[in-house]
Image (tube, rainbow, N blue to C red; front, side, top):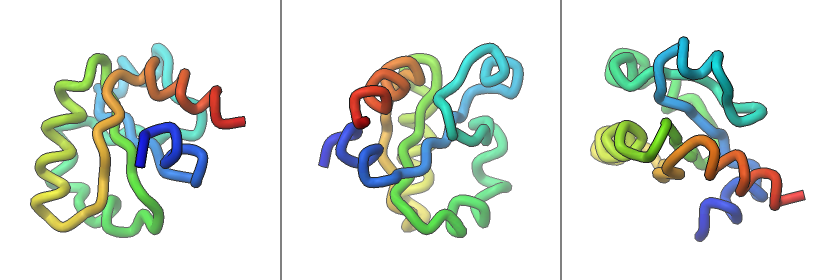
Length: 93
């Protein structure tokens, strides 16, 4: 399934950039869990009852988070840069 299909089907976007970066621009409806907080906030990810699309600035940090979360049994996908995810979201309507 593509990122666009996941978004169209209601996936939750999680931005793993810092809070300051997130405040500078983000995907509408996304939540911010910075990469360094991902391990301690694992319960929040487990409580999300739909597929998770992770994003950051360019895909590096979201790739790290994706690998960690998948190793914990959480279904998630690396969406890459937040602007790419934002564009994909705009194409779903």
